[in-house]
Structures are given as C-alpha cells and as structure tokens.
Image: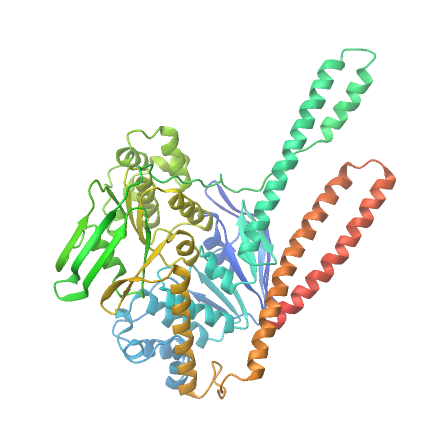
Length: 593
C-alpha cells in the first residue's frame, strides 16, 4: 500500500477563522474517501493545498513521486467552436480512437461527441471533463461536489465509473447517497482537525452521533457528581472534624473533568412555515403546453397535485423540470392550456430566478425582517439565519456583496420564515452541507403544507417525496411508483445501455474482449456482495471496539486500586488485539474490492 499524499501538522487560517489546526492526513493508493464538513470548514482550501495551489502557514504536504492527480475543476476549460472530441484530443494528446473509446464510457457519442461542446448542458460537459481525466491515467482523483447539477442518469454513470476506477479518490460532496455508493472511508474536517473513519458515511454519522451522545451522558454524570462534591465541601470545610474529608473531596473534584463534545457548529435545526393543513386539490393542469415561443418543451399535460403531497419532479437534465416549475408559479407563461391553483393557496418559491432578483440595497437581516411572518420573533429569525450560515457580523452584510451560494441560502431562509402553504423548490439542497440538507428534509417532513420540488440528491428525494412526476420526451405524467421504484428503473436503463455498448464494442470497459455473463461472473458478483456485507459488519465492530477502548482508558485514568488497574490494562490489551485483527481483515477485503 503506497501513501500518495501525506499531510503533517497542517495549520491554515483565513482571517480570524481557523481552517486547519494541526491537521494530519494520509491518502493511500487504493482507497476512495468521502470528504465531508460544514460549509466554510475549509474543504476546498485543503484541496487547493493538496494541489500545491495554496500554501500552509505551518506543516508539510508530501507527494509520492508516482502521484498523478486528476482534478475535476468547476471552471470551463473549453475553446469556442471545438467539439468534445476535439477537446479530449487537445487536452490529452491521445489519438481519436482512444478518446472516442473513453468517451463511450460516459455515453458521449454522435452530436454529443462531435457537436460544439460549449452548447452541451452542464451535466454533459461534466461527462466530457471526466473522460478527459481518465485519459490522463491518474492514480488519485479529486472531485469537488461532482454531482452538483448532474441528473440521476449521469450520477449513476459517474458511480459506475468510480466503482470500476481501481485507484484512489478523494470526493467532496453533500450527497450522502452518492458518497455511500462510491466511498469506503469517510474523512471529516471539523474545528481544524481531520478525522479519518474506516467506514462509509452512514456508519460514520451514526458512530459520531453515538459518540456525542455518550459524551453528553458522561458529562451529565460528571456535572452531577461535581455539584454533590461541591455541596459536601462547602458544608464541611469549616468543621474541624470533617475538614480533612472536605479536602479529600476537593481533590476528587479537581480530578473530575467533562469531555469536550466535538461539534464544530451549533446543531442545525430548521423550522418550516407553520400552516394549517388543507384538503382537496392544490393545483390542476389541463391541456397544458409549456416552453418558449420558438420551442415547445412539453404538451398535453393533465396533472393534479393534492394538498399535503410532497411531489418530486424527476427527469433527465434538459427534459423540462425547471420549465415546469417556472410555469406552475407563473414566472413563465404557458403556451396553451390552464393552470388552476386551489382557493387560499399562498405560494413560496425557491429558484435561481428568485434569488438573483433580491434587493441588493438591503442587508441580510433587513431582508429576513421584510419577508418573515409578522409573528416571527427576533430569536427565531436569528436562529434561522444561523442555521443557513449567517451568523454574527454576516447578518449585517449587504446583499450586493453576497456570493451566488449565499444569496441562495438567504432566499431559503426567507422562504422558511414566511407563511406559504405551498413550497415550490428547485434544487433546494444546492449550496447546503450534509447536516443542513438533513435538517431541511426533517423540516419538510414536519411541514403541513404542499411541497413541489426537484433535486439531484437521492437521499433527500427518498426521505421527502410522497409522489413522483416524470418529465420525459415532451410529456409530464404521474409516475406510478415511489421514488425508489423510479430510481431502480433508471439504474436498469443505464445498465442496459452499458451492456449494449459493451456488446457492440466487443470489449469491456478496459478494452479487453467482452463476453456474456457467465457462472463465474455471477459467482464473483455474489462473492463481492458477501465481502461488502462483511466489510460493513467489520466497520461497525471497529467503531464499537474503539468506543469500548476509549471507555476503558477513561476508567484507567481515575482508577487508584492497583489490582483493578491491572484488570483494566489486560482488558485494553485484549481489545487492541481484536482491533488489530478486525482492521487487518477490513484492509484485506478492501484491497480485494
């Protein structure tokens, strides 16, 4: 196992904010790591440090001589007029046949490969960039929010690509489902420290919450004991007959310490608008055609959404999801047909055309005061602002100096402080970190109104959606199934497309001769599933053993009886043996995968 990048004792500040405070990290050559942390914690800064684009104030970054980084950049690397194939050949220096072969892995063919690359959607341009990365033969991929604005089909293709990529990857993402599908380890940046967890993101979040809850319980016990000792000392210190006991208790009190609970920010809690539940139809579309004067996006739409539904709008990029949402809220007039909203409906909208039209003369606080419900207290307003990362002096910032992401979060905060009983949300999870997306999902589950939304975050869609509306091939229809059913159908379509591509090319993804799935192939797949299950169980076991070891070490610190101390030492040694054995087995299985 080769260590490709090592970070030692890294220190970095941005103004008065500490981003890295003695942080350490090792990235090895065959592990895919999901990188998480609150917005503003310093994840992108660390990536720039690893890429040698930014320097540390203290510490060092060591690159292995064989390191070849493939970095998925957000900027546009394309030249006007060139095709995707032209770009791939120019960027990689590889021949046309090789570029076409790699492009095929991302379904880039025909006009998508040979037409002007700048005319492709953001999702298709991302596919081109990924093909370019692969052509450079990297042994470490760095991807910064790769799923932003990617449709479901492209996300699944990216997952398949990463599963087949048998080298290292460091992936920054707020999409839990994507990280769970692609990464075997989880890295968190919190309060300037980097923590590597030998397991997937869901196991890490569960372990972290269990650890924090344990610390809370221990702290509560310690505080109660401190109060008891303090009362005894105050009562007995002046009494000659009990003064020595009081001094002994004072020594015990000095030894009692609470654990610092490692929470880098206050827990995110988001409240949705408080509204009265309603019955009947929220909106009805009849004979509806949507689009633009020179282009019909979809027609013949017959659609009803009931009050209380949380309707997920799904479909590939470019099919018309945003056009449908804009038509529903009348920011885009329909070409034909009618849209009828129910009586007493108050619509709140979160979309790019809304948060780009905020009054730039207002401060963050002034905007929230202006749009919030008249019954909103200042405490509620500041709590919502804080949950969406407007804290301290940030609430006095003028809107004109806010970034696009900050304006989007401000629009979301204002919407949730209002009185709307219908929320229309276009990609509400963009610009939010993992914990804030989860808090938003919890708020929408508790919301008594109607939600019509689109999102590329599968975990969020799975949690929130109660119904599914598909936009596809010029039509809009209710999908007869839940979101998981829709997800499975798209995965099957992608699998079928990949099988067809491999069959036509006569080879597999590495370019070797292809063949039909055999018994050996099916057995390999069963063995892989069995290994994945064992890895998951080992991750839970390692987390449990770590916690037991931590508890025993804490007892050792306060134990005064030599015999009991020896028993605790023996128990810790036994735990160390189990941990070593479990970690070695986990590493063996991970290397096989």
